[in-house]
Image (cartoon, rainbow, N blue to C red):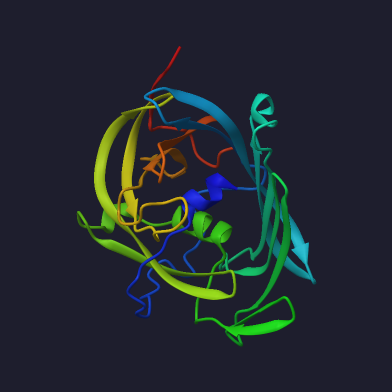
Length: 262
């Protein structure tokens, strides 16, 4: 799913992450939170609404443990399904206190490509089991969904301009020590409204879609929720913009919202 790919962080310097994101208490979200996004694609100077995504948070129980289940659903715009149909679902089941994952599931349905992945994490043994094989992880390892929620609990007041926040995530049989850079605060106008926002830049891996480097920018609300309200990045052909367009059951008032866009 494109929105999840936009969130995947990568650094080419495979040094151990300092884990300053690890095991922080949850202060930013609660059971029942739902956030909706629209995905826009620009290739000739005009942004076209290409799809939508939704992130849901739910209290759950996994093997007798209290957990959160995070679900991310991505769909292409139905009028473009004839070109390339996308129906993707990502699910992460995490410990309610540490937010470290027990299980991650990815169900990809993109055009003629279909794939289902299941990763089982053993945080104590520092391993991840997938497709019948066991891989080494680190002291504090996330999947790509739980990493997003964990990052929302960072206290950005404690960061200096251009300071990097490190984290580890496991995906596709590999452990990635990763980071994003804090770029300060600014006001931004999105499809939803005008926000006071915190500006971040992940370092992306160069591949079939992304050019690589720190060209992506993510803006999150400058309040206690820290929800992403815009993601913007160039890709190999054109540009992608993702805007938050709706929400339910936030843990805190959306104090960063200055004005709704009519």
